[in-house]
Image (cartoon, rainbow, N blue to C red; front, side, top):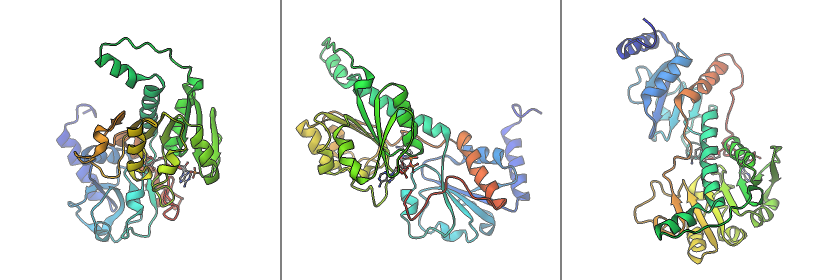
Length: 331
Ligand code: NDP
């Protein structure tokens, strides 16, 4: 029987028999991701590993690995023999902020498809502003032919805060489109077509020259509230803000003030201090705001499971894991 014609029952029976034989298990928990595709992708990448859902684990003592997104309190205490926790996403703030995290290595997802998806979202949001699409949409509603000569991309100054795995992918995509891209990070980067500046002292100058600001920082004690009223005021008049990182990095009240006064020209927000964004939140109806429900990029089982499996093989072989996060640094 070919793999294509194998029935679902046969496949799940095979998975179960592999599980029974395996001495090690991975426990899965996510508030937003389906178990079945992850289980299939992980079983394909590591056939000798049992993959179990939290709440249906046969023997907690044989659980060595956890793949989790926002697990409930008490989750980790149930698995005394964990050797690795993998965060089912790139942003580890919720995980590292817990006081019950076991003292084992923590890794994040690093998935090339996730980078591509994020770069695509950011490119869409930047192009939308660079090509004045919100103004054209408003004109269409009034049946108005509002011709505006498009600007050359190289004259549009885009600033990307954070040049990590996803931030760098987005900055490079914007550079490929010809935008005048600058990026800010803790340490300097060498990315073709991207002007790199680093460190706190460089931030005011960076903001002052940025027409379209893209926030791609992790949420850490050092970035929480970073974009407060004073820093937003450094942006040129009419600047646009795109936040695809975490809500609490940006002071939402200050953003609302900037939008209401017209000093800020618009915002594209995928993340919020409170998610889901409450129905009565003023951002829903603030002028020139596009809201998306935290979906700029997600980890996909097919492309991310091989990375999770690779780290498990590394641990088994006594080699260092990849994409480890540093709890002290916060990302
Ligand atoms: P990384 O952890 O790979 O990189 C973080 C970047 O931010 C690095 O360049 C780092 O600098 C920089 N940085 C961190 N702290 C500071 C600071 N205090 N000052 C200046 N620079 C700083 O993150 P990713 O690029 O992979 O992802 C960014 C964030 O995107 C995630 O943390 C997550 O919160 C968010 N995210 C959102 C998603 C969505 O759907 N909306 C999906 C996935 C992620 P350096 O390189 O010098 O260390």
